[in-house]
Length: 65
Image (cartoon, rainbow, N blue to C red; front, side, top):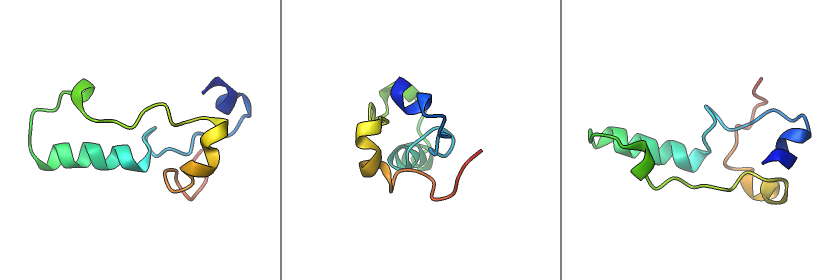
């Protein structure tokens, strides 16, 4: 993560969440369940320079500032 941010590239995750995690959160909201954020099945540890090519469909297609 530090290597990613040292490049001075804006974080392209919308609301600091990848696309998959937006779906996880939306499904929890749609189920109208009490949401315990720590118990949701988040995708984690995917933001890095080495995984950048894999993240292209997880990030905003437009530059976020």
